Length: 272
Figure 1: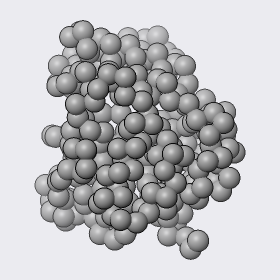
Figure 2: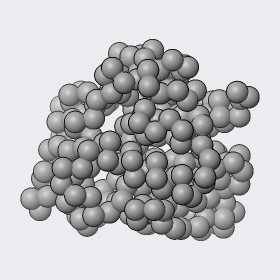
Figure 3: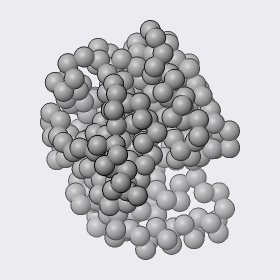
Figure 4: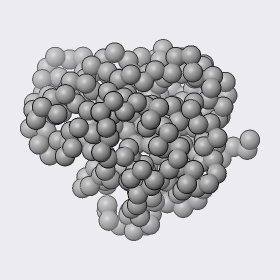
């Protein structure tokens, strides 16, 4: 099914300015998808690739989706502002006009910084399962993951058990993550650590009003990484913004919700 879907959606692979890798698929107006947290600054392979394409396929029915990752070889000390600048330069060179941008999870941090710093690049903005800054629990789990990976230790359990309230379930999920870790360990942990440090310092408090693009914020009511107040603050701080919260829905569940693609498509298709 994965290969058949790739053929149906005409999946192509390329590299933008600054070496930013992307997959493009679907048909229609460009929609730049700033990827969620990734173990490597590369296009996904195997089931990660299939999962990404399957998740974005409903949007690819109406848009040519460009799934863009951060550039590899990220230097220590790189800021979210630096990452946003690279994105702005790459998108301007590739498209030559403002484009719709969808940022999910960590990609939402990038997209928010991009829209605040480089408003001329973004036509409409969708932020899903992300907010104006990381909540403390997410910050700690990401940093523990990145530092353990950089030290060559098993690290996936730091992310996999985030937000699990049941001690028994956390132990079971942590054990499974421990076993799966070698399959998902970053090939270049320095990239992972550099990005995590950049997102750790990311904070648009006082900057949300700089975002001029019409914005849709999408969240799950039971997001494990963000408090609901963070989503509300993000939406309330952006002048032309609205918030959709899916009831009884998790961090990843929000983007897999039956209403996600229709809601995003309707918002991006609206006339100015």
